[in-house]
Image: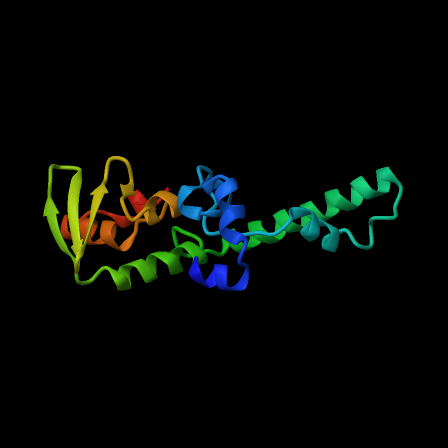
Length: 162
């Protein structure tokens, strides 16, 4: 926040008037999976640049063709996949695995665990697929804390990915 205030002095006032859900990923109530986008219309305008001046029926047919090609291309990629998750999700899981090697895990009960990471403590709840770090809650991919719990209990990681 200090960095933002140094660049834009009025930013604190502006952000305090806007709800946290609008600008802070940790408070967002929707599933956004680390996707930060600008205006969706900009993306559509770029794709429809040549079709924009067509009559309505031709424009709709152009949009249908574009979507049809997108779905076909993605279906071809999906048919060739050799992993349970997409390559992006597998990469995220790999990063979390690398970060999960040095925690202390204490069971609270069968589904709740205290995970100690240096001076920080987190609570992992397997039944809710949740961790107080909020990474698992936001990405729906187990965070490093959850992976340490799952590994210690010989549980299948993939069954905890939403």
